[in-house]
Image (cartoon, rainbow, N blue to C red; front, side, top):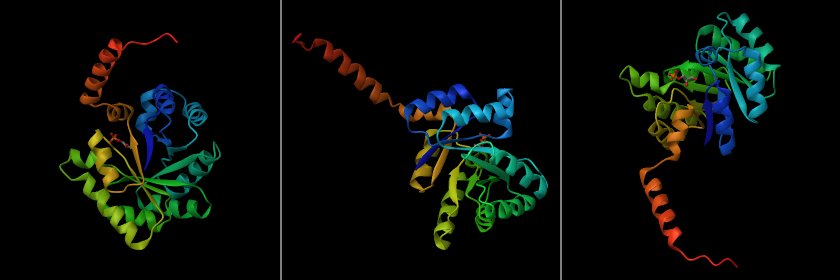
Length: 217
Ligand code: G3P
């Protein structure tokens, strides 16, 4: 399973990159706007830090505009993946881009049928937003399980990026469902490291280690 960091914040990316377990990053217009910085500069900085794929979003909304934006962004780095919205124009754009070898990530996916259409068009990745589904009283993780089953049935190569992750349980459930990738906000990644018993055990070991005689030889 791959872990991406879901942020456009350089400090968070730098800190997470040091752990050595982050395979890439995903951004969206909201995450970019939050940084209040120039788009190209942020993209350059992220690709210099992370040796993995970086998703950036094309806005279109028409297919021609999405394709134009995608071609431009793809030139910025070999690691760029273009997020394309789940619309009729978006799927049309994905079909063209996949023939050109430009990697796509179909975003704002909320149903198995949307994921099926994205795979048919040749999307490299599909991003179902599970947290936003949970927010409206749906079962986001069931959508992931359904997509995994459908892709397996037909041997689709499109990889599933579980997005809109809100807590560590979402990551565990995504892994249990066999999702290819989880894109995780920095604060959730940090929580994945911790356990109260780990902290307690460390304190005990540290106290006991101080009682052990250590020869200077
Ligand atoms: O990057 C897309 C997705 O992860 C957004 O998450 O928290 O805005 O629903 P959220």
